[in-house]
Amino acid sequence: MESFYDQEGACIASKIHILNRTSTVEHHLYFEDSFTDYNIVSADGGKTHRFAEVANVEHVDEDTTDEVYAEHEEVSFYVEGIISEATLPPFKVNATRPAIMEQSIQITGLGNDAFKICVDAIRNAILAFDREFARGDMEPWHCSTYREHEALTFSNRLFERDNRGLKEVELSVGMDDRHVLRNWAIKAGFTHTEDNQVLYGKAVEMDDGDLEIISSKPQTFRIGDIVSIKFTPMIVPIKFNKDRPEQTYKRRMRLKLRAIILLDSSYTDECNRTRMKQGADRVATERKATTSNPLKRKICF
Image (cartoon, rainbow, N blue to C red; front, side, top):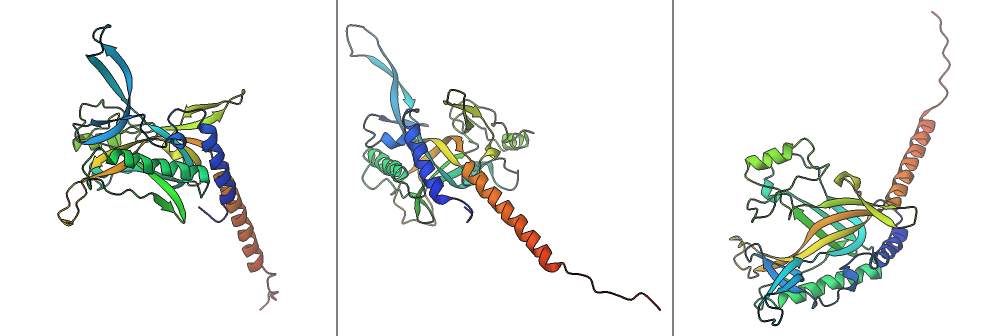
């Protein structure tokens, strides 16, 4: 963030957005302190583990509960913050392999206490996951940092080689409008599935004061914008690294990106306006300093 950016004002504003969103969305990270209300279920053939809740329950016999069919639904959570880093589409096709292409975003609260509560909730999440596995299997989790402030980083790969039976979906608008990336991935044997999908939105205030989320593009977002992130915490396996045979951890937690919603771009816009004005003033000053009255010359033989 530039020196023109009002960090103090954005810090306060991001806290207000956190507190406001807690009353409008379900599963906000601000209120998650133990995660004991959720089941931990395996997915992807047992490779990953996620929080889930029972979507519906059907009893085979109304007079007994011995035989129960329970359908679980993945739980995603929300948190708000200020974008401090971002790698978002569109991406160019280059030597990068589809397997490692991913979009990511980092947010921070610039020190506000509401965001710190959300970071503590993530720590509680990994404690809940940890008791599902053998002691020492889980790699310790450390939050990201932006300068001296705590931050959270979310990511999601663009493609999968094995779609695991998941539905293939089109890349979002603005990511690959000419289908160059999609065709390139297909040739390499990769697909973009519903698990890779990230939604982009923008909050618009309606006449009645309520906020409505409308679709947006990944190009919309800038460093310094205040956004709401929807994500899924999950446990993923750690591949054995022959260059690090001493590595004993088998699993780590990942915050999988599901959606980005722009809530407030005013601090970024004001920063850019100030920067442009400062730049215009500097150019005008430099021109004035380098412009002087020309020397008089006598034109004659």
